[in-house]
Length: 561
Image (cartoon, rainbow, N blue to C red; front, side, top):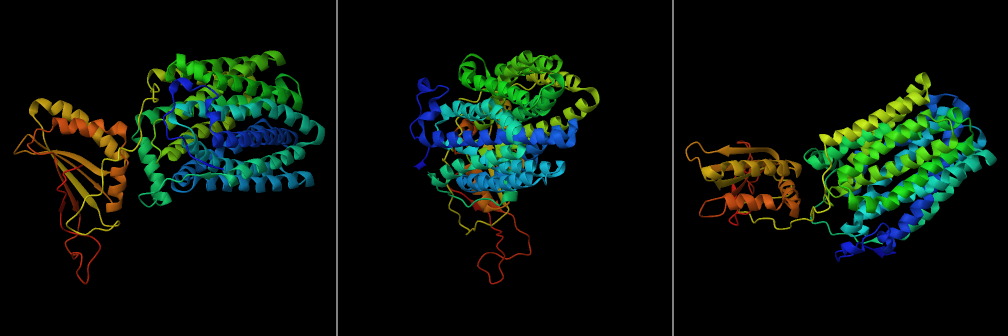
């Protein structure tokens, strides 16, 4: 099985909720993932109910949910850097094999009667670790499997596949737990990994040739943090995501307690509640393309947050199974619409070279909020009751909706984040190696007094893009003797870092250098000088005792920045 995303641009008119299923690789992996998700939901029912039977404590039950989401907060940065630096198929395959091994051990321990509450949390945490490494690689790969126009629908289908499993998985899990015990649920989850492992083992994705060597993991992680910190569009998603995750986690974390204490039910009732949530999520995933066609990204998220708040409040005060299930239908739809919208906003705001890291940072914040919220709501439920915990969670979801007034989400569908590819490595009079550095770049402009305000505005964007893509010590200088002369100066640690920096410019960024060239009033294009910092005690290249650092300045006759 080999494939890559089609080269031809997709006809927007052909995009629908199910249109990504036209692409064979996406379809095969999605189907296998759905089976694996089904097993995971069955395992989740078994773990939550086993914890309820051995711990008899609301906060310990809530910690089952927290133990599965905490790894996203702890490992997402590393997982994203790994997914951007290495073969994503191999990472996904390794994560699935790891989770298979952990599930086998969990099943054996459960059948043997060796499970304690803390051992159960350890196993669910380890499975969460595997999921944390799998998620950025899988989600970043979706953009390589389908054209950009189909990406929102593909992301929604990912959510729908999980929530289809959520629809039937909990009910099946409840039957399995009631009939054969939690250990049987763990065994079913173990079997569910084999299909996805088989599909991934057969997949042979097209690999894009790397023009530059990969960064070390530490540098790659810092590059991801730096990129996101200099991307206002992504930062707004992160803030909204952590608040939403904190509030929304209450429903999932406290659902076993709703089933047992508010409705006086058992495993089957718990499965029905989870199933209702899943049906709502499937409905939300199917309708998201239509909703996004009517509402803006911000209006979509605000509406979903308000709907989720209403559902949480109803679930908190209702003691009737039917009413609670209707509330959870609404909550499920709002859940998948909000998370899918956040995910699409991040994916469409980050170029391919950094997308897994951007997604992992988003997941770290969102699932960090969920993990902290699951624990907090469990503590509140233990001392104040389930109803009070869900009412407070509803209030927090309303806060998330209100934040849209100050931190609105942007429309990202029209962004063109393909590499600009207008810059090539310049020839230098002084020989350089990849490790040569630090490299200082100086660009000289001549700007009329009447254009100064527009120039400074363009330079504000230039500074953000330079720093986002790896430049250090960026400064803007004005000549005191000639007020028309302005100097842009920045540095990179090495020559290789300079090459990486300039290769990261996207087509969306291209208007900034175009604006600056239009404002430049000199007879020649802006002069670009590239220089190597050097200590006075070192010797030039070619000398018998030479350091790799160079002293001589390098001026590029091409004058390209």
